[in-house]
Image (cartoon, rainbow, N blue to C red; front, side, top):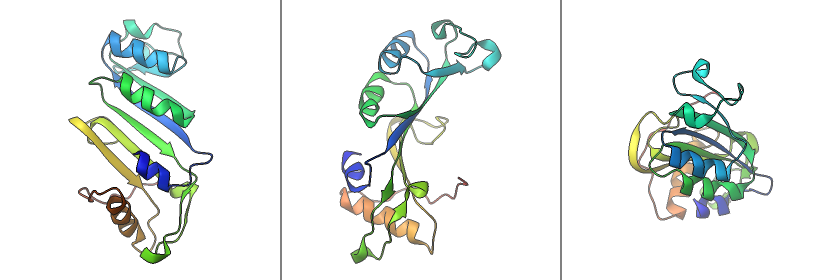
Length: 168
């Protein structure tokens, strides 16, 4: 992730967090990193939420959301999760042009990286023992696939997933 982030324009970037927290220990660690996080009971807001002033430890499992945080919160958040699933999304300022690969610069609207922790998908519905990197780019003339392959090459990896179109 650090290498990918280093290739992006990230001067004004922010990071967003979503997670499903199941244990009191993980909850305590996450609240240490993000003390004012928003949450609600996985069974629904009527079973407890930060909005209602409930104690999250009494409502486990809970879904947590925290948006627009500084980049330095990402690694402590990931370390706090233990086995619980999460998505950490870096909202980047853009992807630079790569003339030798025929890639134009991409603006902030189309530049994200998401690390799903202990999950394969963006919504924490497909548990996993490892993490998955999702690259979000603009779909223009098929260049999204070229950029994903180029980024994978830069980190010594390979594209193994699938291209999905998502409305923003």
